[in-house]
Picture 1 (cartoon, helix red, strand yellow):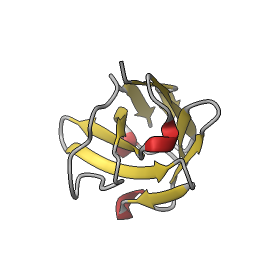
Picture 2 (tube, helix red, strand yellow):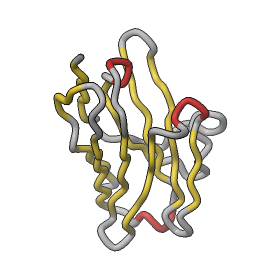
Picture 3 (tube, one colour):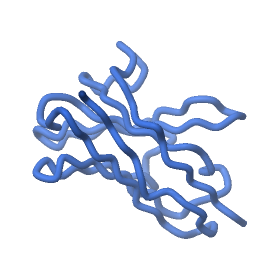
Picture 4 (cartoon, one colour):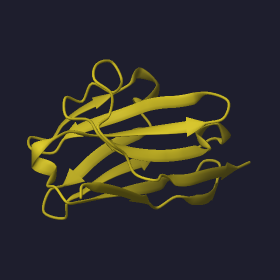
Length: 123
């Protein structure tokens, strides 16, 4: 069974950084793109970034450029999301998702995603 599992979230102070992790099982990262998105009750879903681990090509939504960095380790079957200079607006549940074309919601929707990891930023 193909699954994704996010972890690394938690309670952090504004201005700090956080690295989120996404472990893939049941498939290998070299056959599809992996995206990160987040959800809040107020804003709903916000697509952030995507990576094609095969060649390392990355894509970012305009709102995620600068503070967010997506990367991957094919050997570990893991994708990362580094978030710097966190603010209260970054408080959300963060998900990684299988996004074969790295369309990030502009084309076919995500194939599947994990249960998410909560990030809470205190001020």
